[in-house]
Image (cartoon, rainbow, N blue to C red; front, side, top):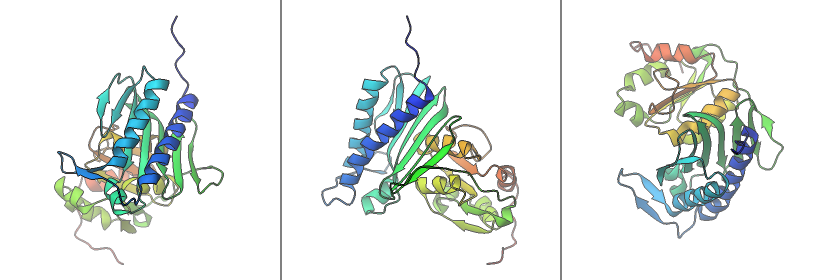
Length: 273
């Protein structure tokens, strides 16, 4: 006999319990005077909290989903890629180690490379976003009842609010001119950064989020969240993948307009303030 595979509702319930376990560890270490910080071979930072959170999540998954694979930022890939849990124990480590509350644990389940369950838990903000295929996108904050999310209805770039993450990212990717062109096409541009930008987009408070130098664990849960909130998610070139090392998330209405700007010569005309 073969066992019955878990339903997405079971997987989502597990993902939320994983987030509870992560929050208990990360909040205790946040702004701790004894926080241990080291540098990885790629010159990025890692804290003892990153490592402890991922170890804890892997232990739970090994017990509850032993047949599933895992891709984690700190401890790599193990097991099957057919059903794979994708973990970023602390997205926004640079913020975490400086005491800035803009960080979260990111948890996703991907089936054959496509995210179907996603949770982003930001305990220092008192916020948690989650979604599963066909179940909608949701937000709970500061102990209130969860509310379902919907992206904005903004239809024109000139009325849109953009979060672009980092000028350095776009410059290193060779897209700085395109970023400037896009910034001149929209109403407002800011770099809210990390997971918060995607949460704001799902809540309908931003209209466009775009960034480079992202790994699967940086964006996987937001693919589900944005899609279930009514938006669209792709790489910068429009490809539907989480492995393209770039991301473009929009309210859906604006997606092709943004792609058009990013693939044409940037305008030299400055927008009004």
